[in-house]
Image (cartoon, rainbow over all chains, first blue to last red):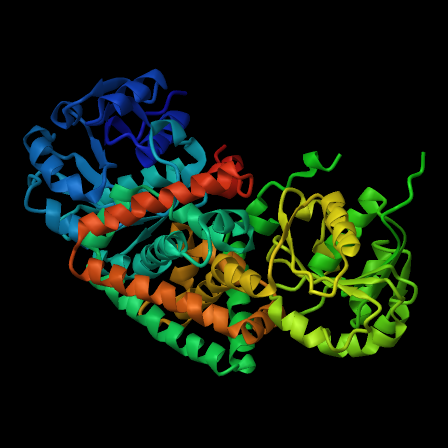
Length: 311
Length: 311
């Protein structure tokens, strides 16, 4: 009954939270005969080996991609061009090269002229993650019921796109095909600007003199702590996001700031009607996100409330 | 062995999420002989009666406070003055009057000259909640290991303050005593401005034409959905917060906007060093909040990831 797996050999370059979660999902689904892992951090690589996240482990990405039918870059996007140059000569004809980066137009620009013409280059972005980093924090279920966006280049073959789509579906995701530029605009509002303002308010609170850091920490359950989760995301990865999706981020941040000016004015003018109108409208969006299976309906994200202290 | 309860009779005015959670915690801890509930919504009142959240139920708050040793207002702060006028004549000499409102200086101003001199008026604010509203969503554990801030007026007796402190400790909370004005500044940064920017970005995303609402919903797991939780909080309660803590909110919002301008400039200038520096610093604050027992260490708030779909 042993079906032929989707890919004979898969190489994952970068075994952090996302790379290691993909590795676990591949192993869970038996999606390849040979899973090859590479990471430039010796510590991450040996951790991945101890966790048995693949069948072979290489410090050098050019060794890892040899004979691979699918290569997935899972490193910060700022490293892509250098990695592309390292692996280009070793890529098998007909291989699919993909990635998981949070920006897509920059990825196309960084890799398109580096990769050989005999591979299918299909950038990808699974919309999932946690605030934790490193191989030990990955888990196979991370992509279940989440979306993965593919932004195929014009040269990519339809059969390669179909294969990569089948791969992500086997991992548990729904796949959407999109233009790279549109992806970057969509993610600017659904992910990048939210991260920017979360990082910003945590920084503001940290800098205050009129309110002590100890007060911020003690009374964070009033709402602030929600923001600290995404403001605890990987600093290098997020630095690279803002360096490589500048225009879309500034465009969406501009819209956010226009709206915030109006809201600031409504507070100053004690315009209760405007405030209540906005606060009522925003309630409905969460309901739609829950109905779409993209969020839990449990109160407070399902955070544990400590009844153990009660007795 | 039956110890005398902390208060012979307690009246809760307003049986929404917070009022009903206090009621459950009182019943859990046997903190009174007679728990009297009032709500101006007949639906909430009959729901509370069905849920057996108290021993007596009155539509009229002036009936509810009769003979009560402790009266807690759990309605939106915009209603306080009217309720104060209704209950003033019926308050027992030596009773403690408190509340759970998210602003405190306004509460003092609204109630101080309405309440009779023979009661101890001690405003309070438990720093806890969820995005759900209504009596059925309350639970006794809501206040466990959270802080409750008391902002006693100058006239309140020390013995009354001690009794109310013991009450909140019996409910599961740590108690901090603070000046009302300082409370309002602290909460502006730890709660009110976070809510304002969450409401704002959800509104911005809802208004876009370049990105469809369906895209915002599908790809919200990139970070946006975190903001929708607090942007789903009760509209009337939050309208009243911004109408009654205007100065502190505008002050903290001003600080947030100054910092955001610098961050916007760093994105425009591709200042990777500044971005990485901020993103590294903000990571530590979450760690402190977790260490202080005010947040879960579970990845993604402990949101459920759907492994059930995998097979």
